[in-house]
Image (tube, rainbow, N blue to C red; front, side, top):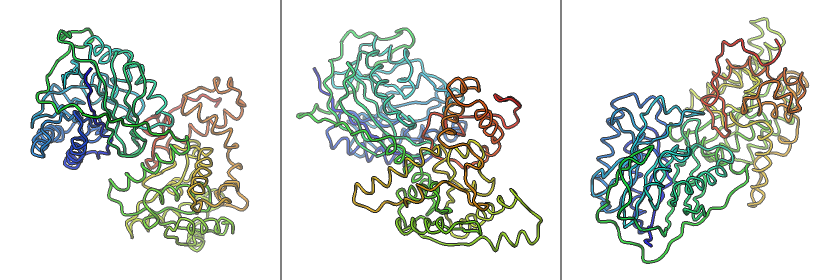
Length: 572
Protein backbone atom coordinates (compact mmCIF):
# COMPACT_ATOMS: atom_id res chain seq x y z
CA UNK A 1 0.00 0.00 0.00
CA UNK A 2 1.61 3.31 -1.08
CA UNK A 3 2.14 6.10 1.46
CA UNK A 4 1.48 9.61 0.20
CA UNK A 5 2.62 12.74 2.05
CA UNK A 6 0.12 15.55 1.51
CA UNK A 7 0.43 19.22 2.41
CA UNK A 8 -2.74 21.24 3.02
CA UNK A 9 -1.95 24.96 2.94
CA UNK A 10 -4.56 26.75 5.05
CA UNK A 11 -3.72 30.32 3.99
CA UNK A 12 -5.23 33.80 3.77
CA UNK A 13 -5.59 35.21 0.23
CA UNK A 14 -6.91 38.68 -0.63
CA UNK A 15 -9.49 39.27 -3.36
CA UNK A 16 -7.91 40.87 -6.40
CA UNK A 17 -4.32 40.60 -5.19
CA UNK A 18 -3.17 38.12 -7.83
CA UNK A 19 0.52 38.89 -7.38
CA UNK A 20 0.36 38.69 -3.60
CA UNK A 21 -1.68 35.49 -3.66
CA UNK A 22 0.74 33.88 -6.12
CA UNK A 23 3.63 34.86 -3.86
CA UNK A 24 1.82 33.12 -0.98
CA UNK A 25 1.51 29.94 -3.05
CA UNK A 26 5.24 30.03 -3.82
CA UNK A 27 6.18 30.62 -0.17
CA UNK A 28 4.00 27.84 1.21
CA UNK A 29 4.86 25.44 -1.62
CA UNK A 30 8.51 25.85 -0.61
CA UNK A 31 7.59 24.96 2.97
CA UNK A 32 5.61 21.95 1.73
CA UNK A 33 8.52 20.73 -0.39
CA UNK A 34 10.95 21.22 2.48
CA UNK A 35 8.64 19.00 4.56
CA UNK A 36 8.90 16.24 1.97
CA UNK A 37 5.34 16.64 0.66
CA UNK A 38 4.46 14.83 -2.55
CA UNK A 39 1.45 17.08 -3.28
CA UNK A 40 0.38 20.49 -1.96
CA UNK A 41 -3.17 21.80 -2.06
CA UNK A 42 -4.33 25.41 -1.67
CA UNK A 43 -7.87 26.81 -1.14
CA UNK A 44 -10.63 27.53 -3.61
CA UNK A 45 -9.99 30.57 -5.87
CA UNK A 46 -6.61 30.98 -4.22
CA UNK A 47 -5.13 33.11 -6.97
CA UNK A 48 -8.01 35.58 -7.14
CA UNK A 49 -9.26 35.44 -3.56
CA UNK A 50 -12.86 34.48 -2.79
CA UNK A 51 -15.58 35.49 -3.38
CA UNK A 52 -14.78 37.70 -6.37
CA UNK A 53 -18.45 38.63 -6.94
CA UNK A 54 -19.01 40.78 -10.06
CA UNK A 55 -15.30 40.97 -10.85
CA UNK A 56 -16.07 37.73 -12.67
CA UNK A 57 -17.82 39.77 -15.37
CA UNK A 58 -14.67 41.76 -16.20
CA UNK A 59 -12.84 40.04 -19.03
CA UNK A 60 -9.65 41.79 -17.94
CA UNK A 61 -9.85 40.17 -14.50
CA UNK A 62 -10.53 36.70 -15.86
CA UNK A 63 -7.63 37.09 -18.31
CA UNK A 64 -5.37 38.25 -15.48
CA UNK A 65 -6.30 35.14 -13.47
CA UNK A 66 -5.37 32.71 -16.23
CA UNK A 67 -2.18 34.65 -16.99
CA UNK A 68 -1.24 34.60 -13.30
CA UNK A 69 -1.79 30.83 -13.26
CA UNK A 70 0.62 30.27 -16.13
CA UNK A 71 3.19 32.60 -14.57
CA UNK A 72 2.86 30.81 -11.24
CA UNK A 73 3.58 27.47 -12.87
CA UNK A 74 6.73 28.92 -14.42
CA UNK A 75 7.79 30.59 -11.18
CA UNK A 76 7.35 27.42 -9.13
CA UNK A 77 9.66 25.58 -11.50
CA UNK A 78 12.17 28.45 -11.34
CA UNK A 79 12.01 28.16 -7.54
CA UNK A 80 13.13 24.55 -7.85
CA UNK A 81 9.63 23.27 -7.07
CA UNK A 82 8.77 21.87 -10.49
CA UNK A 83 8.53 18.27 -9.22
CA UNK A 84 5.93 19.12 -6.57
CA UNK A 85 2.33 18.94 -7.87
CA UNK A 86 0.56 22.05 -6.61
CA UNK A 87 -3.24 22.19 -6.60
CA UNK A 88 -4.43 25.78 -6.70
CA UNK A 89 -7.83 27.41 -7.21
CA UNK A 90 -8.30 30.15 -9.81
CA UNK A 91 -10.84 31.76 -12.15
CA UNK A 92 -11.02 30.36 -15.68
CA UNK A 93 -12.95 31.40 -18.79
CA UNK A 94 -13.20 28.13 -20.70
CA UNK A 95 -16.72 28.12 -22.16
CA UNK A 96 -17.83 30.78 -19.68
CA UNK A 97 -16.51 31.85 -16.28
CA UNK A 98 -15.43 28.81 -14.25
CA UNK A 99 -14.63 28.25 -10.62
CA UNK A 100 -11.58 26.13 -11.33
CA UNK A 101 -8.54 24.41 -9.95
CA UNK A 102 -5.31 23.51 -11.68
CA UNK A 103 -2.49 21.10 -11.00
CA UNK A 104 0.82 22.89 -11.60
CA UNK A 105 3.80 20.65 -12.30
CA UNK A 106 7.01 20.86 -14.25
CA UNK A 107 6.54 24.54 -15.02
CA UNK A 108 3.19 23.92 -16.73
CA UNK A 109 -0.53 23.65 -16.07
CA UNK A 110 -0.75 19.87 -16.07
CA UNK A 111 -4.53 19.61 -15.83
CA UNK A 112 -7.62 21.46 -14.60
CA UNK A 113 -10.98 20.75 -12.98
CA UNK A 114 -14.15 22.87 -12.98
CA UNK A 115 -16.46 22.96 -9.96
CA UNK A 116 -19.55 20.84 -10.56
CA UNK A 117 -22.01 21.83 -7.81
CA UNK A 118 -22.57 25.60 -7.73
CA UNK A 119 -24.15 26.88 -4.49
CA UNK A 120 -26.90 29.44 -4.81
CA UNK A 121 -28.10 29.96 -1.24
CA UNK A 122 -27.13 32.12 1.72
CA UNK A 123 -24.13 34.25 0.76
CA UNK A 124 -23.49 32.27 -2.43
CA UNK A 125 -24.54 33.35 -5.94
CA UNK A 126 -22.48 30.96 -8.01
CA UNK A 127 -25.25 30.20 -10.51
CA UNK A 128 -25.05 33.91 -11.34
CA UNK A 129 -21.32 33.76 -11.96
CA UNK A 130 -20.10 30.37 -13.12
CA UNK A 131 -20.72 27.54 -15.54
CA UNK A 132 -20.61 24.08 -13.93
CA UNK A 133 -18.08 21.45 -14.89
CA UNK A 134 -19.11 17.96 -16.05
CA UNK A 135 -15.77 16.12 -15.97
CA UNK A 136 -14.06 14.72 -12.88
CA UNK A 137 -10.28 15.00 -13.06
CA UNK A 138 -8.30 12.11 -11.57
CA UNK A 139 -4.54 12.35 -11.31
CA UNK A 140 -2.27 9.37 -10.78
CA UNK A 141 0.54 10.31 -8.43
CA UNK A 142 3.11 7.96 -6.88
CA UNK A 143 0.90 5.00 -7.67
CA UNK A 144 -2.29 6.50 -6.18
CA UNK A 145 -5.39 7.78 -7.98
CA UNK A 146 -6.55 11.16 -6.63
CA UNK A 147 -9.83 12.86 -7.58
CA UNK A 148 -9.91 16.67 -7.46
CA UNK A 149 -13.00 18.58 -6.27
CA UNK A 150 -14.00 22.08 -5.09
CA UNK A 151 -15.95 23.16 -2.00
CA UNK A 152 -19.69 22.70 -2.73
CA UNK A 153 -18.92 19.42 -4.47
CA UNK A 154 -18.51 17.96 -0.97
CA UNK A 155 -21.74 19.49 0.39
CA UNK A 156 -23.97 17.65 -2.09
CA UNK A 157 -24.55 13.92 -2.40
CA UNK A 158 -23.95 12.50 -5.84
CA UNK A 159 -21.91 14.19 -8.51
CA UNK A 160 -18.12 14.21 -8.10
CA UNK A 161 -17.92 12.03 -4.97
CA UNK A 162 -20.26 9.38 -6.31
CA UNK A 163 -18.32 9.34 -9.58
CA UNK A 164 -15.04 9.21 -7.64
CA UNK A 165 -16.33 6.04 -6.02
CA UNK A 166 -17.13 4.49 -9.38
CA UNK A 167 -13.68 5.54 -10.61
CA UNK A 168 -12.19 3.63 -7.62
CA UNK A 169 -9.86 6.43 -6.48
CA UNK A 170 -7.86 6.18 -3.28
CA UNK A 171 -8.07 9.86 -2.26
CA UNK A 172 -10.29 12.87 -2.95
CA UNK A 173 -8.75 16.32 -2.50
CA UNK A 174 -11.35 19.00 -1.84
CA UNK A 175 -10.26 22.68 -1.87
CA UNK A 176 -12.53 25.16 -0.11
CA UNK A 177 -13.61 28.71 0.50
CA UNK A 178 -16.11 27.73 3.21
CA UNK A 179 -17.22 30.73 5.34
CA UNK A 180 -17.44 30.45 9.10
CA UNK A 181 -20.67 30.02 11.03
CA UNK A 182 -20.93 29.11 14.69
CA UNK A 183 -20.52 25.33 15.11
CA UNK A 184 -19.95 24.78 11.40
CA UNK A 185 -16.83 22.81 12.33
CA UNK A 186 -19.11 20.16 13.84
CA UNK A 187 -21.12 20.01 10.62
CA UNK A 188 -18.00 19.79 8.46
CA UNK A 189 -16.56 16.68 10.07
CA UNK A 190 -19.72 14.61 9.70
CA UNK A 191 -20.11 15.92 6.15
CA UNK A 192 -16.58 14.90 5.17
CA UNK A 193 -17.16 11.49 6.73
CA UNK A 194 -20.35 10.99 4.67
CA UNK A 195 -18.58 11.89 1.45
CA UNK A 196 -15.71 9.55 2.33
CA UNK A 197 -18.25 6.74 2.63
CA UNK A 198 -19.85 7.76 -0.67
CA UNK A 199 -16.52 7.84 -2.51
CA UNK A 200 -15.05 4.85 -0.66
CA UNK A 201 -11.89 6.93 -0.39
CA UNK A 202 -9.90 9.04 2.03
CA UNK A 203 -10.55 12.79 1.87
CA UNK A 204 -8.16 15.70 2.28
CA UNK A 205 -10.21 18.85 2.86
CA UNK A 206 -8.35 22.19 2.84
CA UNK A 207 -10.10 25.47 3.67
CA UNK A 208 -8.95 29.07 3.48
CA UNK A 209 -8.62 31.33 6.50
CA UNK A 210 -9.07 35.08 6.86
CA UNK A 211 -11.60 37.88 6.51
CA UNK A 212 -13.20 39.14 3.31
CA UNK A 213 -15.71 41.96 3.88
CA UNK A 214 -18.49 40.40 5.99
CA UNK A 215 -17.24 36.84 5.56
CA UNK A 216 -14.58 35.20 7.66
CA UNK A 217 -13.01 31.84 6.82
CA UNK A 218 -11.88 29.68 9.70
CA UNK A 219 -9.62 27.06 8.12
CA UNK A 220 -10.40 23.84 10.03
CA UNK A 221 -8.80 21.67 7.33
CA UNK A 222 -9.44 17.93 7.76
CA UNK A 223 -8.08 14.54 6.69
CA UNK A 224 -10.23 11.41 7.13
CA UNK A 225 -9.88 7.78 6.07
CA UNK A 226 -12.26 6.04 3.70
CA UNK A 227 -13.95 4.66 6.81
CA UNK A 228 -14.43 8.14 8.25
CA UNK A 229 -11.72 8.07 10.93
CA UNK A 230 -10.36 11.54 11.63
CA UNK A 231 -6.60 11.51 11.07
CA UNK A 232 -5.65 15.18 11.15
CA UNK A 233 -7.31 18.53 11.76
CA UNK A 234 -5.87 22.02 11.51
CA UNK A 235 -6.64 24.83 13.99
CA UNK A 236 -9.31 27.42 13.32
CA UNK A 237 -8.63 31.08 12.47
CA UNK A 238 -4.90 30.66 11.86
CA UNK A 239 -2.73 30.07 8.81
CA UNK A 240 -1.32 26.56 8.99
CA UNK A 241 0.53 24.05 6.83
CA UNK A 242 -0.78 20.60 7.67
CA UNK A 243 1.56 17.79 6.64
CA UNK A 244 0.20 14.25 6.90
CA UNK A 245 1.22 10.83 5.59
CA UNK A 246 -1.64 8.73 4.25
CA UNK A 247 -1.59 5.00 3.53
CA UNK A 248 -3.69 4.64 0.40
CA UNK A 249 -4.69 1.82 -1.94
CA UNK A 250 -2.61 1.43 -5.07
CA UNK A 251 -4.15 2.66 -8.31
CA UNK A 252 -5.92 -0.06 -10.27
CA UNK A 253 -4.55 -0.59 -13.79
CA UNK A 254 -8.04 -1.18 -15.18
CA UNK A 255 -9.83 1.61 -13.27
CA UNK A 256 -12.73 2.90 -15.40
CA UNK A 257 -12.61 6.16 -17.30
CA UNK A 258 -14.91 8.09 -19.63
CA UNK A 259 -18.64 8.42 -18.90
CA UNK A 260 -19.44 7.19 -15.39
CA UNK A 261 -22.99 8.47 -15.02
CA UNK A 262 -23.39 12.05 -13.77
CA UNK A 263 -19.91 13.01 -14.96
CA UNK A 264 -17.18 11.69 -17.17
CA UNK A 265 -13.71 10.94 -15.82
CA UNK A 266 -10.45 12.33 -17.18
CA UNK A 267 -7.22 10.66 -16.00
CA UNK A 268 -3.84 12.35 -16.00
CA UNK A 269 -0.50 10.86 -14.96
CA UNK A 270 1.82 13.06 -12.89
CA UNK A 271 5.32 12.28 -14.14
CA UNK A 272 8.43 12.35 -11.97
CA UNK A 273 6.60 12.38 -8.66
CA UNK A 274 8.53 13.34 -5.51
CA UNK A 275 9.89 10.32 -3.60
CA UNK A 276 7.83 8.56 -0.94
CA UNK A 277 8.55 9.56 2.67
CA UNK A 278 11.07 7.48 4.59
CA UNK A 279 9.44 8.12 7.98
CA UNK A 280 5.85 8.84 8.95
CA UNK A 281 4.51 12.30 9.78
CA UNK A 282 1.11 13.01 11.29
CA UNK A 283 -0.67 16.34 11.01
CA UNK A 284 -2.15 16.20 14.51
CA UNK A 285 -5.65 17.04 15.65
CA UNK A 286 -6.17 20.60 16.90
CA UNK A 287 -8.26 21.06 20.03
CA UNK A 288 -11.83 22.32 19.70
CA UNK A 289 -12.77 25.49 21.57
CA UNK A 290 -15.92 26.80 23.26
CA UNK A 291 -18.60 28.62 21.28
CA UNK A 292 -17.63 31.95 22.83
CA UNK A 293 -13.95 31.45 22.01
CA UNK A 294 -14.83 30.46 18.45
CA UNK A 295 -16.98 33.56 17.90
CA UNK A 296 -14.41 35.86 19.54
CA UNK A 297 -11.63 34.60 17.27
CA UNK A 298 -13.91 35.03 14.24
CA UNK A 299 -14.74 38.63 15.17
CA UNK A 300 -11.10 39.48 15.85
CA UNK A 301 -9.92 37.99 12.56
CA UNK A 302 -12.77 39.55 10.59
CA UNK A 303 -12.00 43.03 11.92
CA UNK A 304 -8.22 42.67 11.59
CA UNK A 305 -8.39 41.64 7.94
CA UNK A 306 -10.97 44.29 7.07
CA UNK A 307 -8.65 46.95 8.49
CA UNK A 308 -5.42 45.51 7.09
CA UNK A 309 -6.66 44.54 3.63
CA UNK A 310 -8.32 47.93 3.12
CA UNK A 311 -5.28 49.89 4.26
CA UNK A 312 -6.58 51.55 7.41
CA UNK A 313 -3.98 52.51 10.01
CA UNK A 314 -6.33 52.59 13.00
CA UNK A 315 -9.93 52.55 14.21
CA UNK A 316 -12.06 54.90 16.30
CA UNK A 317 -15.25 54.17 18.22
CA UNK A 318 -17.52 55.80 20.74
CA UNK A 319 -16.95 54.52 24.29
CA UNK A 320 -20.14 54.87 26.31
CA UNK A 321 -19.20 52.57 29.18
CA UNK A 322 -21.93 50.16 28.06
CA UNK A 323 -21.55 46.51 27.17
CA UNK A 324 -21.59 46.83 23.36
CA UNK A 325 -18.92 49.52 22.98
CA UNK A 326 -16.82 47.77 25.63
CA UNK A 327 -16.88 44.49 23.75
CA UNK A 328 -16.12 46.20 20.43
CA UNK A 329 -13.18 48.02 22.02
CA UNK A 330 -11.80 44.76 23.42
CA UNK A 331 -12.18 43.06 20.04
CA UNK A 332 -10.41 45.96 18.34
CA UNK A 333 -7.51 45.90 20.80
CA UNK A 334 -7.13 42.14 20.36
CA UNK A 335 -7.25 42.55 16.58
CA UNK A 336 -4.97 45.54 16.12
CA UNK A 337 -3.18 46.38 19.35
CA UNK A 338 -4.04 49.21 21.73
CA UNK A 339 -1.88 51.72 19.86
CA UNK A 340 -4.19 51.50 16.82
CA UNK A 341 -7.50 51.94 18.68
CA UNK A 342 -9.02 55.31 19.64
CA UNK A 343 -11.93 55.36 22.09
CA UNK A 344 -13.93 58.54 22.46
CA UNK A 345 -16.20 59.27 25.42
CA UNK A 346 -18.89 61.75 24.33
CA UNK A 347 -20.93 62.52 27.44
CA UNK A 348 -24.11 64.55 27.41
CA UNK A 349 -26.11 65.95 30.32
CA UNK A 350 -27.84 62.54 30.57
CA UNK A 351 -24.65 60.50 30.78
CA UNK A 352 -24.34 58.88 34.18
CA UNK A 353 -21.22 59.17 36.27
CA UNK A 354 -20.78 55.41 36.33
CA UNK A 355 -20.90 55.21 32.53
CA UNK A 356 -18.17 57.82 32.21
CA UNK A 357 -16.15 56.02 34.85
CA UNK A 358 -16.65 52.65 33.14
CA UNK A 359 -15.44 54.02 29.80
CA UNK A 360 -12.32 55.44 31.44
CA UNK A 361 -11.76 52.17 33.30
CA UNK A 362 -11.89 50.16 30.09
CA UNK A 363 -9.46 52.54 28.41
CA UNK A 364 -7.05 52.11 31.32
CA UNK A 365 -7.39 48.31 31.26
CA UNK A 366 -6.79 48.01 27.50
CA UNK A 367 -4.32 50.88 27.00
CA UNK A 368 -6.17 52.35 24.02
CA UNK A 369 -5.98 56.04 23.08
CA UNK A 370 -8.74 57.57 25.22
CA UNK A 371 -10.33 60.93 24.55
CA UNK A 372 -13.25 62.89 25.97
CA UNK A 373 -15.40 65.11 23.75
CA UNK A 374 -18.46 66.49 25.63
CA UNK A 375 -21.40 66.90 23.27
CA UNK A 376 -23.74 69.10 25.32
CA UNK A 377 -22.42 72.45 23.97
CA UNK A 378 -22.92 71.20 20.42
CA UNK A 379 -26.42 69.90 21.20
CA UNK A 380 -27.29 73.21 22.83
CA UNK A 381 -26.10 75.08 19.74
CA UNK A 382 -28.52 73.07 17.60
CA UNK A 383 -31.38 73.59 20.06
CA UNK A 384 -30.71 77.34 20.13
CA UNK A 385 -31.42 77.44 16.41
CA UNK A 386 -34.06 74.70 16.01
CA UNK A 387 -37.19 73.87 17.97
CA UNK A 388 -36.87 70.16 18.78
CA UNK A 389 -38.33 67.97 21.51
CA UNK A 390 -38.78 64.37 22.57
CA UNK A 391 -37.31 61.71 20.27
CA UNK A 392 -35.85 64.35 17.97
CA UNK A 393 -33.63 65.61 20.81
CA UNK A 394 -32.59 62.05 21.68
CA UNK A 395 -31.63 61.38 18.06
CA UNK A 396 -29.84 64.73 17.85
CA UNK A 397 -27.47 63.62 20.60
CA UNK A 398 -26.67 60.40 18.76
CA UNK A 399 -26.12 62.28 15.51
CA UNK A 400 -23.77 64.80 17.13
CA UNK A 401 -21.73 61.85 18.34
CA UNK A 402 -21.71 60.43 14.82
CA UNK A 403 -20.46 63.77 13.46
CA UNK A 404 -17.61 63.79 15.99
CA UNK A 405 -16.50 60.27 15.08
CA UNK A 406 -16.64 60.96 11.34
CA UNK A 407 -14.74 64.23 11.84
CA UNK A 408 -11.97 62.35 13.65
CA UNK A 409 -12.00 59.78 10.86
CA UNK A 410 -11.59 62.49 8.22
CA UNK A 411 -8.97 64.37 10.20
CA UNK A 412 -6.81 61.45 11.35
CA UNK A 413 -7.62 58.61 8.95
CA UNK A 414 -9.32 56.19 11.37
CA UNK A 415 -11.93 53.66 10.34
CA UNK A 416 -15.07 54.32 12.39
CA UNK A 417 -16.45 51.24 14.15
CA UNK A 418 -20.13 51.21 14.96
CA UNK A 419 -21.16 49.17 17.97
CA UNK A 420 -24.80 48.10 17.50
CA UNK A 421 -25.60 44.41 17.96
CA UNK A 422 -27.81 42.12 15.88
CA UNK A 423 -30.78 42.44 18.25
CA UNK A 424 -30.77 46.24 17.96
CA UNK A 425 -30.26 46.07 14.21
CA UNK A 426 -33.18 43.66 13.90
CA UNK A 427 -35.71 45.90 15.63
CA UNK A 428 -34.32 49.24 14.46
CA UNK A 429 -33.19 50.31 17.93
CA UNK A 430 -30.64 52.80 16.67
CA UNK A 431 -30.39 56.30 15.26
CA UNK A 432 -29.77 56.49 11.55
CA UNK A 433 -26.65 58.63 10.93
CA UNK A 434 -26.09 58.62 14.69
CA UNK A 435 -24.98 55.59 16.66
CA UNK A 436 -25.30 53.55 13.45
CA UNK A 437 -22.61 55.60 11.70
CA UNK A 438 -19.42 53.76 10.80
CA UNK A 439 -17.49 51.80 8.23
CA UNK A 440 -17.54 48.41 9.97
CA UNK A 441 -19.60 46.79 12.71
CA UNK A 442 -17.98 43.87 14.56
CA UNK A 443 -21.23 43.03 16.40
CA UNK A 444 -23.56 43.22 13.41
CA UNK A 445 -24.34 39.48 13.55
CA UNK A 446 -24.03 39.06 17.34
CA UNK A 447 -27.29 38.97 19.37
CA UNK A 448 -27.32 40.96 22.59
CA UNK A 449 -27.45 37.87 24.80
CA UNK A 450 -24.31 36.56 23.08
CA UNK A 451 -22.58 39.93 23.58
CA UNK A 452 -22.81 39.41 27.33
CA UNK A 453 -21.49 35.86 27.04
CA UNK A 454 -18.55 37.08 24.96
CA UNK A 455 -17.71 39.71 27.56
CA UNK A 456 -17.77 37.13 30.35
CA UNK A 457 -15.64 34.74 28.30
CA UNK A 458 -13.04 37.38 27.38
CA UNK A 459 -12.62 38.50 30.97
CA UNK A 460 -12.39 34.90 32.20
CA UNK A 461 -9.82 34.14 29.49
CA UNK A 462 -7.72 37.09 30.64
CA UNK A 463 -7.84 35.86 34.22
CA UNK A 464 -6.89 32.35 33.09
CA UNK A 465 -3.79 33.81 31.45
CA UNK A 466 -2.94 35.95 34.45
CA UNK A 467 -3.83 39.20 32.68
CA UNK A 468 -6.20 41.99 33.65
CA UNK A 469 -9.74 41.51 32.30
CA UNK A 470 -10.35 44.19 29.64
CA UNK A 471 -14.06 44.77 30.29
CA UNK A 472 -15.16 46.35 33.61
CA UNK A 473 -17.59 44.21 35.60
CA UNK A 474 -19.98 47.14 35.88
CA UNK A 475 -20.24 47.41 32.09
CA UNK A 476 -21.39 43.79 32.00
CA UNK A 477 -23.67 43.77 35.04
CA UNK A 478 -25.59 47.06 34.74
CA UNK A 479 -28.90 47.29 32.82
CA UNK A 480 -28.27 48.53 29.25
CA UNK A 481 -29.27 52.07 28.41
CA UNK A 482 -28.77 54.53 25.54
CA UNK A 483 -28.76 57.36 28.14
CA UNK A 484 -30.45 59.83 25.83
CA UNK A 485 -33.02 60.94 28.45
CA UNK A 486 -33.17 60.80 32.25
CA UNK A 487 -33.43 57.27 33.66
CA UNK A 488 -33.68 55.63 30.23
CA UNK A 489 -33.33 51.84 29.95
CA UNK A 490 -33.46 49.60 26.88
CA UNK A 491 -36.43 47.81 28.45
CA UNK A 492 -38.44 51.04 28.09
CA UNK A 493 -38.55 50.36 24.34
CA UNK A 494 -37.71 46.66 23.97
CA UNK A 495 -38.71 43.35 25.52
CA UNK A 496 -36.28 41.57 27.80
CA UNK A 497 -33.34 40.53 25.62
CA UNK A 498 -33.71 36.83 26.46
CA UNK A 499 -37.26 36.88 25.09
CA UNK A 500 -36.39 39.19 22.20
CA UNK A 501 -33.43 37.13 20.99
CA UNK A 502 -35.43 33.90 21.10
CA UNK A 503 -38.10 35.40 18.84
CA UNK A 504 -35.51 36.96 16.53
CA UNK A 505 -33.69 33.63 16.20
CA UNK A 506 -36.89 32.08 14.93
CA UNK A 507 -38.06 34.94 12.72
CA UNK A 508 -34.77 36.19 11.28
CA UNK A 509 -32.52 33.13 11.33
CA UNK A 510 -35.19 30.46 10.97
CA UNK A 511 -37.72 32.27 8.71
CA UNK A 512 -40.55 31.14 11.00
CA UNK A 513 -43.93 32.79 10.61
CA UNK A 514 -46.06 34.29 13.36
CA UNK A 515 -48.13 31.19 13.99
CA UNK A 516 -45.04 28.99 14.23
CA UNK A 517 -43.48 31.36 16.76
CA UNK A 518 -46.65 31.36 18.86
CA UNK A 519 -46.79 27.56 18.63
CA UNK A 520 -43.28 27.48 20.08
CA UNK A 521 -44.66 29.11 23.22
CA UNK A 522 -44.00 32.82 22.65
CA UNK A 523 -46.63 35.31 23.79
CA UNK A 524 -48.75 36.29 20.75
CA UNK A 525 -48.83 40.00 21.61
CA UNK A 526 -45.05 40.03 22.10
CA UNK A 527 -44.51 38.20 18.80
CA UNK A 528 -46.68 40.76 17.00
CA UNK A 529 -44.79 43.61 18.59
CA UNK A 530 -41.35 42.24 17.70
CA UNK A 531 -42.28 41.28 14.16
CA UNK A 532 -43.68 44.74 13.53
CA UNK A 533 -40.43 46.35 14.71
CA UNK A 534 -38.34 44.03 12.53
CA UNK A 535 -40.41 44.59 9.42
CA UNK A 536 -40.44 48.38 9.52
CA UNK A 537 -36.67 48.63 10.17
CA UNK A 538 -35.59 47.16 6.85
CA UNK A 539 -34.65 50.60 5.47
CA UNK A 540 -32.22 51.10 8.36
CA UNK A 541 -30.57 47.73 7.88
CA UNK A 542 -30.10 48.42 4.18
CA UNK A 543 -27.91 51.39 5.13
CA UNK A 544 -25.92 49.67 7.86
CA UNK A 545 -22.17 49.06 7.84
CA UNK A 546 -20.81 45.62 6.95
CA UNK A 547 -19.88 43.33 9.80
CA UNK A 548 -18.53 39.84 10.35
CA UNK A 549 -20.98 37.01 9.72
CA UNK A 550 -21.09 34.38 12.47
CA UNK A 551 -24.61 32.93 12.15
CA UNK A 552 -26.50 30.93 9.57
CA UNK A 553 -28.34 34.10 8.51
CA UNK A 554 -26.66 37.48 8.84
CA UNK A 555 -28.29 40.73 7.77
CA UNK A 556 -27.10 41.68 4.30
CA UNK A 557 -26.28 39.05 1.71
CA UNK A 558 -27.89 36.26 3.72
CA UNK A 559 -31.26 37.98 4.21
CA UNK A 560 -32.57 40.06 1.33
CA UNK A 561 -36.01 41.56 1.76
CA UNK A 562 -37.67 44.47 -0.07
CA UNK A 563 -37.91 47.77 1.76
CA UNK A 564 -41.23 48.59 0.09
CA UNK A 565 -43.23 45.59 1.26
CA UNK A 566 -46.80 45.30 2.53
CA UNK A 567 -46.64 41.63 3.53
CA UNK A 568 -46.93 41.28 7.28
CA UNK A 569 -46.88 38.15 9.44
CA UNK A 570 -48.47 40.10 12.27
CA UNK A 571 -51.94 41.73 12.35
CA UNK A 572 -51.91 45.24 10.93
